[in-house]
Image 1 (tube, rainbow, N blue to C red):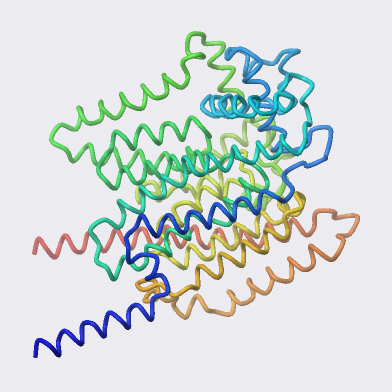
Image 2: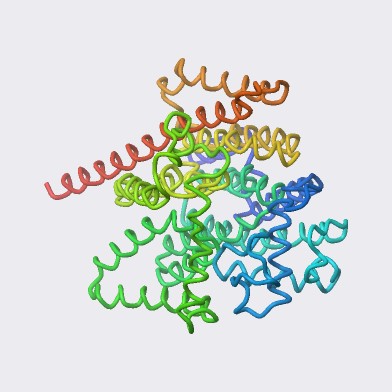
Length: 502
C-alpha cells in the first residue's frame, strides 16, 4: 500500500511539473527564479533604450529627457539654496525643478556620475539640448541603475515577504508574479523610453508595502516618506498608508506611543530631506510653490481622467477660476477617495479627480493592481491594457510605436501563460459580454485610425479625444469595480467574525 501511495505521489508531482511551465524557475527557490526573470527584464530595458526618447531633436525645449539632464546641470553647478530659485542663472521657465528635494539629490548624484565620464553633458548653460551619443548612453544608464538598485530589490523584498511560508503548489505562481511586476510594460515604456525615474518612487512604495506585510511599520513609514519626497504624486497612496498604519496603532496596547513613533519617523525623514530649505520660510514656501504648479491648469494634454474627458462637453477652464477648480478637484477627490481610504485603495480616485494629472500618472493606480495580480487578474489585465492605450498618443509622439507594440504583446503573453492558482480564477461570463467585445474592437480600430489617418482640420485632436473617452469610460468601470470588491471583502470579513462569535 505504501509503495502504491508513493508511486501516486510521484506521478502527481510529475503531472504538476508537466502542466506548470514556471516550475523550472521556482523549484530552486525565489532567489533563483527572481534572478532569471530580472536578467531578462534588464535586457528588455536595454533594448528599449536604443529607441528615441521624449523631445529627441525637438528644440528649443526638447522634452522630459532634457528636463532630467537640465536638473543634473543645475544641481551640479549651483548651491542647493538656489535650485528652486528663479534667477538669471537658473531660469525656471526652462525645465525648472518641480519635484521634491529627494529628486534634486538624485539628479545631483547622477550628475556626478555623468560629469566623471562626459563633463560637456552637464556643463552650465552650454549643455542645453545636449544630445551626444555618449551623453545619451550615460543618461540611459542612470535610469537602468536606478531600476536595478531600487525597484528590483523592492520587488524581491515584496515577493519574499508575500510568499514566505506558502506551500509548493502556491509557489509555482511566484515566477508569474515576478514577471508581471518586473516586466511592467507601462513603467518600462515611460522610464526607459519616454525617459523618467518613476522606478525610484514606485520602488520605495513597493518596499513600504512589503515592510507593512512584515509588520515593520517604522521601516514602512521611512520608505514611504522617501517616496513622497521623491515624487509628490506618491501622495495618491497616502490615505491608504495613513488609514492602515493608524488603525494598527489604535489596536496596540499603547496607541498614543505607537502613533508618536510613526510620527517621529515621518517628521525626521522629512526634516532630513528638506534640511536646506527649512531654515527660511521663504525658501520653504518657494519649494512648495514649485511642487504645486496650479497656474498650468487643471489638466494638461489628453489624460483619461474626469476633468479632461468632460472638458469635451464642459469647458472647465473657461467657466471657473483656478481657485474654484482647485476647490472642486479637492472636493471630488476627497469624496471619492473616502470609501477607498477605508478599504486601502485611493490611487484611482486621485488619478480620476485630482488637480494637474498627467498621462503617466496612471502608473500609480497600476501599481496596486500589479501587487494584487494573483488575486485580481481581471483588474490587472484591463487596467494595464487601457493604461497602455491611454499613453499611446504620448508614446507615438516620442517615436516609440514599435516598443509599444512589442511590450503590449509581451504583457499579453505573460498574462496568458499558465500559472496554477491564477487559472482557477476565471472571469465571469458578464465580463465576456458584448460591451467588452465592443471596447476591444474600438481600441483596435482607434489604433489603426490614429496611425493611418489625419483628423479634420477643424478638430485636430479628434483621435486623442476618442482614445481619452474610451479609456476614461473603462477606468470608471474599474474604479467602481475595485470599490465594490473592497466593500464585499470587508462585508465577508465581518460575517466571518460574527460566525465565530456565534
